[in-house]
Image (cartoon, rainbow, N blue to C red; front, side):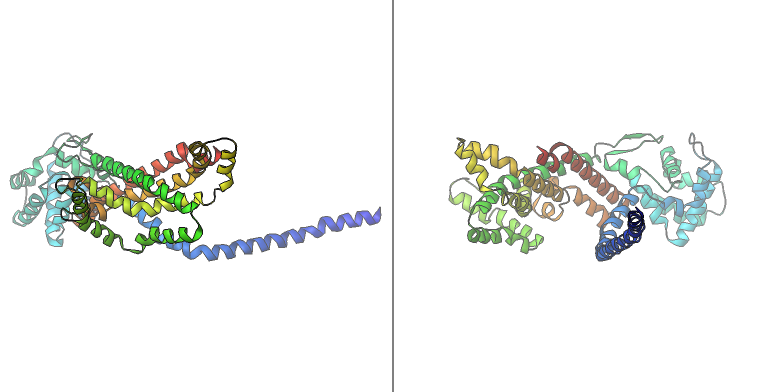
Length: 417
């Protein structure tokens, strides 16, 4: 009994240091693995996470008026918003405009007001330049006399919203809404309400291109998966060949092919399929054709990778049990390809949402997608708030669609089925 008790004691207390050493080894292993992936994590953080976070922040942040008109903003915090502000607010505005002339920031103030009231930039800069001639008050009547802009109640309501560095204006404008004269949210006028149509157009083109890419890539993927390896590898090189060419070059090639005197029209007329050259470029047809060509490899490869791993014995077994060729394919083979179809279509659709170069070169004015307007506000209008808001809404829509896709026809559900 004494020996047994000693052995039990040694086992109980001898395993404890061993467990500690195992835990230390496991921690070192995890730390080593973390250090190996740390450069990739930092790269993703710097090039992906931070820019997206900055974009979302810019869509709701605008402190232009708060920093360029500090005296006016301080006075408007106490304004009830009913009538025009008091003489003190106009005096503060005059002081801010005088300082803006000295610091050369009047154009920035005018540009911000111009976002909501077109034509305001010239009136703001003109008012600022004339402030040097105004030595003393009353400032209210003087400013309204210089420009009727300062006598508008809705303009002052807009300035009062500038007392906060955060605004919903850009997000509202991106969905064709804006602030009304009294600060309420109202639909944008029909002549500037374009973004809902742009988002619908972006989704429609992306869905159409994805459907076309699936229709063309599925039989090619099936052919690649069933042919001998030597022939399949040669065809795979031909499939991947477009990826070795620049996107801009491929798009420009379609401009040449689809023009009225291009190869496509010449062939169709030579075959007597059309009596005269068809309009295949600078419209929706050219956009879909060019985008489909670019998306084919991205749709095909996931489907092919799944088809390659489907055993031939499954179809043979179905045929041996009396199933016809079509029934065996549709009931046995095709369901096993659904994960690849789902992955390929999702990848293609998400990539299509962000297209810019191809619609800009091949499409017409009514074929431009959201990315075109993001580039427009970034490069030409210099309106980072609108560009960020459009990007944030597109990102949100993509995430929502991805979530719905996973819930309805997600790959996990397909595998479970």
